[in-house]
Length: 124
Image (tube, rainbow, N blue to C red; front, side):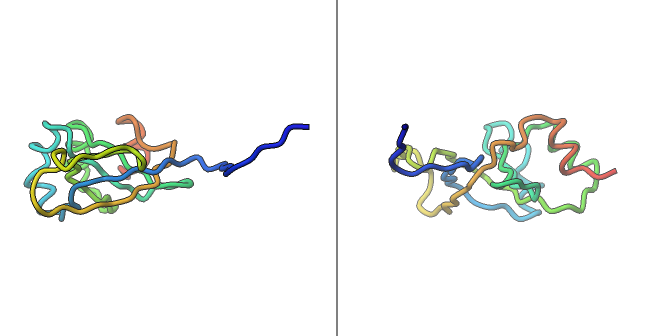
């Protein structure tokens, strides 16, 4: 007989800590190109399974989103750091005096491609 001790989880999500700030629509449109260039623009979508859909926005995704005049809500983040929940973050990693911390349970089926983004967030 085999015995397993400790916590067992069947969850298909992973926990991450995001340090940065949520952007308003005006901030998103004003800062998007700059944040994409430095790899700090992320989206949190409403498509869900067990965790949320949290993914890095690419230039192509941004242009598709803007061109579609999409009314579906995606929350946008200026993410300075995206780290595993138990990873180490040093004070020197964080820019500025004030910042927001968000705990994200990210589904393992999160958006990883432009095709995923279109099928989940761009309505015809």
